[in-house]
Length: 218
Image 1 (cartoon, helix red, strand yellow):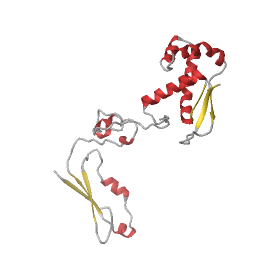
Image 2: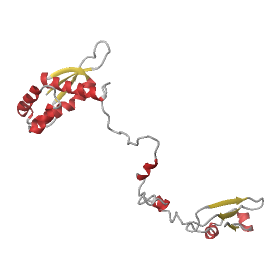
Image 3: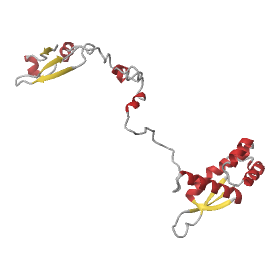
Image 4: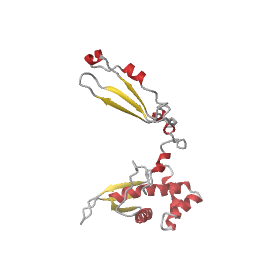
């Protein structure tokens, strides 16, 4: 059953002053607790401000009890979704075959123009050669990338436990270097806490002009 309520919000004095009477307008409008579907029509006139016509179509159980949907506590309860308590649960409605993931801010990894498996093999080989010879020449990007892995192997050797030795054996290709590193690291780096390598820049490589550098153990 349709009920039509028409409220004239202006008078002759209002037409001359061109102002809305907001108090009479808000008091005449029904509350949101009793209305679910409504339509508002403005009928214009040539002599005064337009009048407001509010039409209620049907009576239904209320969904919007208050404006708590704008709060941070339970934002979806006021919308009728009792089983959803946060916007994180609403992501289940996205069913288009996509995968939702966060952006990788501040997690830059030097790719070295290699896929992940080849990049790890390259870094393992550079670490092994640097620990074996003490000084190698490579590009600046590779020297900067391998630096933290060499420092990690030395930190594992300073710990000296069996678990740390097995971790080093799983990364360094030659196990004789691992045993020699664990035997001599306390004498060489016992008083130093980090900073076990040094990078020295040198002339660019001939041919492709790639920036080169020496990386050596301190």
